[in-house]
Image (cartoon, protein in one colour):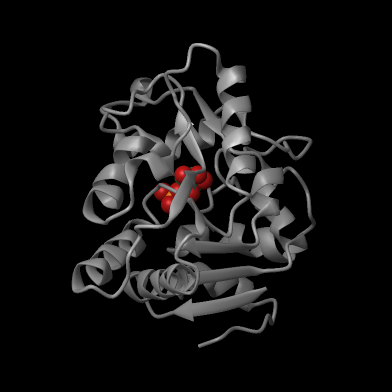
Length: 250
Ligand code: F6R
């Protein structure tokens, strides 16, 4: 694993955007696995800025997002489709038909999960998967449990995730209780993984995910077994993992 420590959130965002743009420049038809949440917002802003300057194009890129809330339509301003449109897709030249987000309104979630896994297979898998990390170690919405789910599945959100995400909704009661998420198997099959973490509140989970035991109780811990993981964090998020004496790039 390669770890980049950045001075602050904006440096972290630039570094992550550099890695994504290198992927897009070297492989213009690549498949990007994309994440939502607050951490990658600065990364997307940076990519949009470079796109507007003419430094990169998403015209050939295909994308698959990690997850979507169950019961929220693409037009709902807290849906992850809406997030992707407003933070990235609407501002760059990616073709809408080349972007994929699970359908939170699907009447048959099992069929939607199977459809989504087929999309990932048809694309030939993911070249670069961007991930944020929950305070409980979740990746996508793979919450702590007693096994690592392989494919896309319906998940009950934990109270900790509902608490963490209520800031985006009018009240906690409005936070959906379920989501469709890509499985850990699909994430682990990505050729490379880029994890972004920011803030002191992530420091403890970053340490246990990357230096603690590999356990489905900390879903991100499985990334220790992935051959090409890059962790990009700001100084605050890396304070605990630093104590393990891991090698960190500047
Ligand atoms: C989002 C996602 C989640 C977030 C995680 C961290 O698509 O899959 O796993 O990455 O909840 O969220 P933030 O970045 O808001 O701390």
